[in-house]
Image 1 (cartoon, rainbow, N blue to C red):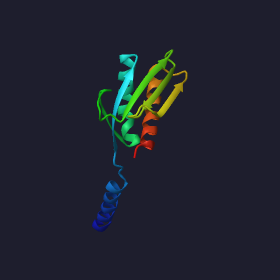
Image 2 (cartoon, helix red, strand yellow):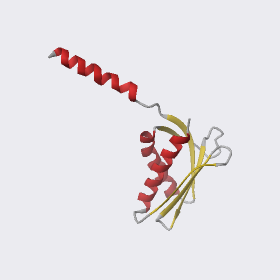
Image 3 (cartoon, rainbow, N blue to C red):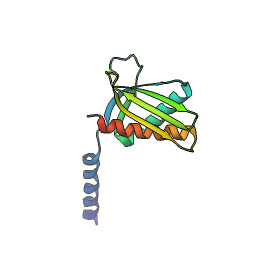
Image 4 (tube, rainbow, N blue to C red):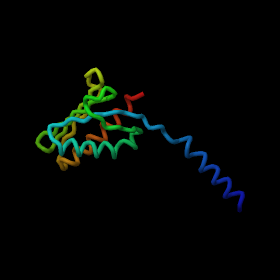
Length: 123
């Protein structure tokens, strides 16, 4: 019985570090026409970052180390436009979400989608 337990423990231990992803570090500044939208988006992006394999540090838009400036705008409470600009001001990723869910729900969906896009383009 002890042999079986040891073998199972070794197998489980071997899966841990080998399958764990190293989080990709990013420095992101978020800008919005509304303090509430900015707050919601940052909270939702913090929640989405582990699943996307990111480690996000939120910085000021004037920070020279910033990787992306993310612009967040909500249209009529039912649609979001999110644009991530790289250091040179070029569009790196964008998300447009609309639907008959709450404004907060649209914001959360936008944050999750942007996190996935940024993870896919970050080396």
